Amino acid sequence: MSPTMIGITGIVIMILLFLTRMPVAFVMASVGFVGFSVMITHNAGLVLLSRNVYEVFGSYDLTTWLLKWGLLHRPSALTYMLSTGLQKIFKGIFPFLLAVIVGVIILIIFPQIILFLPQLMY
Image 1 (cartoon, helix red, strand yellow):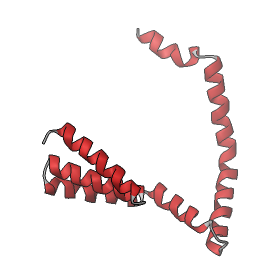
Image 2 (cartoon, helix red, strand yellow):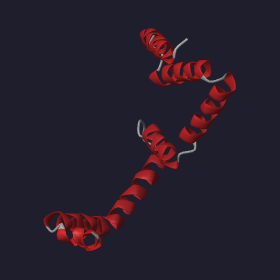
Image 3 (cartoon, helix red, strand yellow):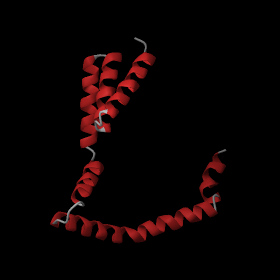
Image 4 (cartoon, one colour):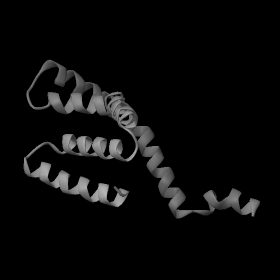
């Protein structure tokens, strides 16, 4: 089977699975796993699946945001502690963020500052 036919078949199967109201993540993961397994080997598909699952759940940013959004649907002490902690962080970051914004504005107004060194090289 050609890679084009495998791709078209995967899209059709994906649409059919969407019509069953299956969650998008599971549909895309399963169709991607089967398609990759058909094109390469079954073992390569399993390695890809395990690596992608680890990368998603091993991401610190993703897990903290999922924790935060999962706790926002009802009031709890953990939600309060997280929100007050984030408020303290953003209050502490604000002067530095303001300095970065001012610096970017200055560099937009005066691009010669950035282009000085490249102009010396060429």
